[in-house]
Length: 299
Image (cartoon, rainbow, N blue to C red):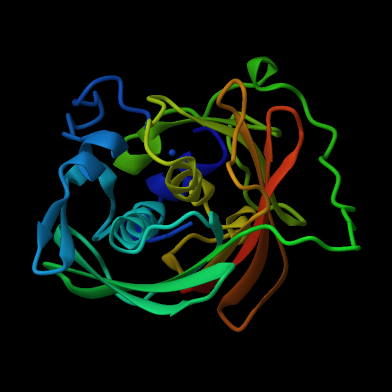
């Protein structure tokens, strides 16, 4: 059995694996592994219904990971609703997400404008579904400001191009949503486990490139990787992202060929909690986004 996710998905303890860390491997609506029916991101967002001020979405099985929806999708629905109800010229600068409970089926997002100033806008979004209250989000939209400081010292790692790397192998326990992404780990073909460091470095692109707002598409894709702590695992069991913050460093994220280099790293895992950093570069090795997640471990 290949190393990486296949080991996690194949272990008995991992059958309730729930990581909310989050891309469209949909070669059409049906997948060969279990014939799970799935809509594309654009189709799902395009089907949104406006109801008494809220936005309603239908989450199908192709976006699920165990008993909850893929965390990147939950964040995307919250952002989509926030932008529909409280749009403006300022681009998304920061997304703050709390994964409070499971999400699935019919989902409803309630938004409210927290503050509007000359250069920034704060919007809250609460996502509930058939499974109860699920996700709390706060989005900050902010225009550029003139500043005498320009301090950029995060450089892209020296990595192979995605075409030179093997894709993630398929496996019966692979969550359906992961087939929406083409993933090429640097250490390939899997992410690894039982390693001395908690570090994942992987090229990721959508199989079916979304036409939606690029911030929504990238926020969804940003959560695609498993938590960095999984590379340390010598035994397998459930884990779940609990909090997530992602900063966008450009007004309009872009990557010429659709590939994004995602890096997740944890340097502190203790007492059932992992604090990880997250970086995203485009195909030109330009830094597009930085963030981090808090991950609860039950193993």
